[in-house]
Amino acid sequence: MSTKAESLSDDAATQARRQTATEDPYQLRPEDVSEPPQTFRASLRRIGPGMILAASIVGSGELIATTTLGAEVGYVALWVILLSCLIKPVVQAEMARYIIASGETGLAGFDRFPGPRATIGRRFGTVNWIVWAWALMTLMTMLQVGAMYGGVAAVMNLLIPAISIKLWVLIFAAITLALLLGGGYDRIERLAMVKVGLFTMLTFLAALLLIRMPQYFSWSAMLDGLKFKMPGQGFSTAVAVFGITGVGASELFMYPYWCVEKGYARFAGKRDGSPEWNARARGWIRVMHTDILATMVIYTIATIAFYLLGAGVLNGMGKVPSAKDMIPTLSNIYTQTLGPWSLWLFYLGAIATLYGTIFASVASNSRVYSDMCRLMGLFRAEDYAARVRFRNRFIVALTIIPVSLYMFIESPVNMVKAGGIAQALMLPVIGIGTLYLRHRLLPRDIAPARWVTIFLWIATAVIVWLMGYYVIGQIRTMFGA
Image (tube, rainbow, N blue to C red; front, side, top):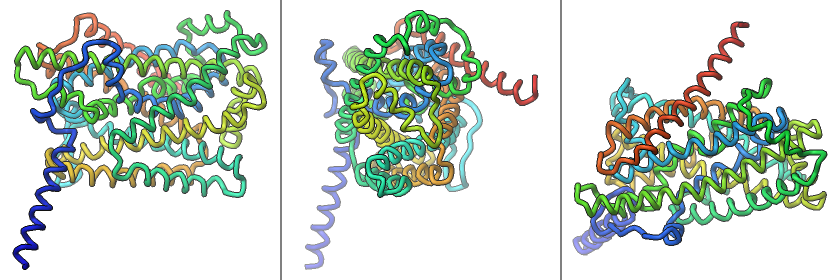
């Protein structure tokens, strides 16, 4: 009887291992190879990673930081918003090209970059300085996530005052854990699409109505904002906005992982140098480009709409969001354009926007942190069950840390700015790292067109220039120069 029971147990364990292996999106298996869609319409049906990214992008950066920048400086920094949205996707696309071509994860690619390596103990393997810089930056962005918890809790407190803001924060933390623990790609993609569509359309409508309100909007002021002038007193906010809006540093690290889980690398298959593989890989890279393009259109429209509303309505009213009145101040972007009746729409949209970003951010960062543990040798690449265990542990940690930060700081606007500056300072590292992947590690037969490479160099140069300008300005301020 005992032998029979042990045999059944062994069979169950073997079946579980097989099921885990089948579900592992990080392994390149011959049976997963699939031909890419050939038309643009068919490619649109296979997008998804970018929508999860958009759910993370259209959040604290747009609702809090972008509108705050507009409130502080008016239309003068519109060029910063456009530059942020339009210049970084080429870096995003080339990072994803590398993971489709190599079958590696994004962090594994950057771990190949030359330079110092370090570990946290003798039992663990070393990872390079870019991986450590990502880990530290992500800890800084916990300030942003904490701010979003505070923002969504503040809205709920306005709706149900009997429950305090801090208690609402704890309630949303519990909801996050319930939704994400054990959750796979499909669930996250569906929720992301709902969130992105809801608030983007309403905010775009409010921005359209703003154009017909001369007390808040003028075409000459908006066109003046397209001139490359630094926004003076609001420059630190502008740098934070550049780091957060569009594809921020966090999202650049996240995107390759969602491409892997969607299946773009698996569908292309393991590189064998054959013309068939090359055609498949280029086909799935084309689908990835469609995904990036669709996402870029969505978040650019949303970001510009938020900025125009902040520059027009809030700056026109002389109101800048602060720790104590952030949500009531921000609600003016709806009530002054759509009418007083839209206050409830703003509340619902703010809840969807801020919480959706919390959800997408925790889901994404938990995957990258667990991959960092793999690179340090804490589990084998083919052990997907261990990857899921580590991912769930990080979901818990990445929920507790920002909630704790908010409880101590309780200043959402400043928390978003601090996290945004940390992301902005990481952007040059990502740009230079991507150039290294492109020129040293990417197979020549899958390299992009020459004009794409030129644009990648230009984008990296602009990012380095802007961040260098900011750092030098900060040093001069510190020393009174």
